[in-house]
Length: 267
Image (cartoon, rainbow, N blue to C red):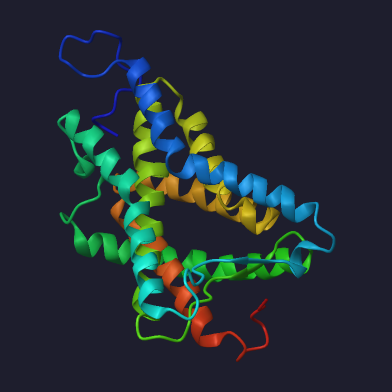
């Protein structure tokens, strides 16, 4: 990015910008309260799955499950709390960038080019969505992946709005932190573009490891594509749109089709 600092900031920078040690510690802390911690959790979950009797495809990884079965209003409160609290690290990143005099706009996460973001994002989602489904079905069939259950919410009026909000939360959190923020910070810390791409992609794969080897590899490849597109376009916006559409398709599509089509695995 044009306003990044590939060599990093030395300690005691006279313009008041934070030094490299502060940037390093800040980055580790942001990851520690967000997707870095999710990566460790996913690794532990994966170890539990592979050491459990039976194959991976006979086990299920459930997303968007009920938090209070039989109590829909309490369940809704927990769902909304989970979505809002998961976005706190994004607010933290925005705070750190504002401290630099930048803000999320420097990552291309704004309303400056809405039609560009929507059009490019929809195109990316169309390509990745079709190949992603095929890859998941193949990985599960070969025994490399758990059966992913995108939603297990009760049939209540707020089910689909919550699924859409959950998809938006996932996309904003992941693309802001794993692509925009992490690449910016690694550039400031002196990492080469290639090593930064590897770090971002492996991180994306790591917190999907709870789904199995297929989830790890598929999301790592998606991470490579997203880093390339971000560097090409200079904007997080299209990636957030693409990720949102992919997750909405997965969550809502599963809710509508599970048990009604033979090709869609269910737990």
